[in-house]
Image 1 (spheres, rainbow, N blue to C red):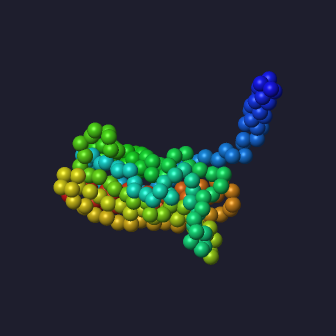
Image 2 (image 1 turned 30 degrees about the vertical axis):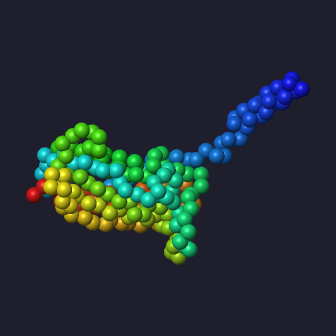
Image 3 (image 1 turned 45 degrees about the horizontal axis):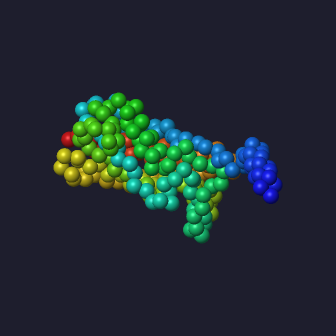
Length: 204
């Protein structure tokens, strides 16, 4: 009896291993980076380099949004996730990292950091991701991004200014890369607005 159970266990292990090798590919999600290459709307040549340390805080976001999944909002208002596709990191981490990279690439600040970097901070950029996903509308599928932004004077603790930015882009196609392309295009428009607006609200 013991031998029979032993051989049955070995056979089960081989079956599981074979399934892993031959059949698990169906559950693997296609992974994309949240990117976007924003075109700065203002004339950066008019901006003087500011000896300012900017902290980009991790965005506030509802739990339903803050994952690797891409959210769908159906016409009736119900929510779901796109199947077979995901971002490379959680939404809040990805948005924060992208903002930091863009501000660094302008070379117009004394420093850009996140909480825990240990730098002296002059201002904080605080964001709230209100919407980030695919909306099914009468006119078709649209990527929609909406982010509220605050510039906080870290020394006084006062909010210097606040604004809400949003953008929509049509999804042209049904493949995963069509959804990602539309999402990144909408995100790029919002990023450009955020960067321009932030520089206008730093310093005196």
